Length: 207
Image (cartoon, rainbow, N blue to C red; front, side, top):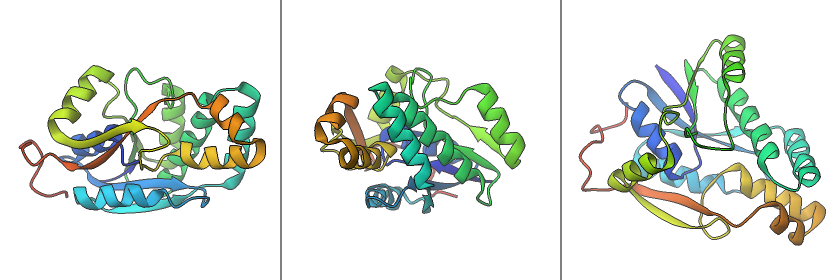
């Protein structure tokens, strides 16, 4: 069974891939508006992990709406949620039986509530999977510490591919760097360099 997993190259989406691996043919997919080439960071992580990878072309109009929402709100949550749901829609248009993401139980954004998941499944005849939905941050951190080689640092310095980088670029172009700093609070991101060679839980090869 084929699943398209939204992938940033970070630890949550990587752990989601490992959990799905025994039951699905996992393809890691990264959405891009074509503004930056940050998706290459996700591709490198996917190559190290041994999973197929592809990009999803996202609608620039969705980025425009998301950035406008961020400017109006003064924070990124609703804009990022808009882009995440759009990326799931694009993933569901692929030739797959399921779409998935790395959202955790205690995530504030992005999240996928039950009506949104049900609508996605009904309209595209796919299953929506959130393999980390039962896990909080502490449990995810413990599993990734055991299984993955991870770099952690400020979002401006850690190389990964998520919606934030491109949305930052658009926001900076339209409203200036000061607005970017006020909308996006400082926070750490993660980037996966590979599976810890001492971890024995990984299947020998991806399906």
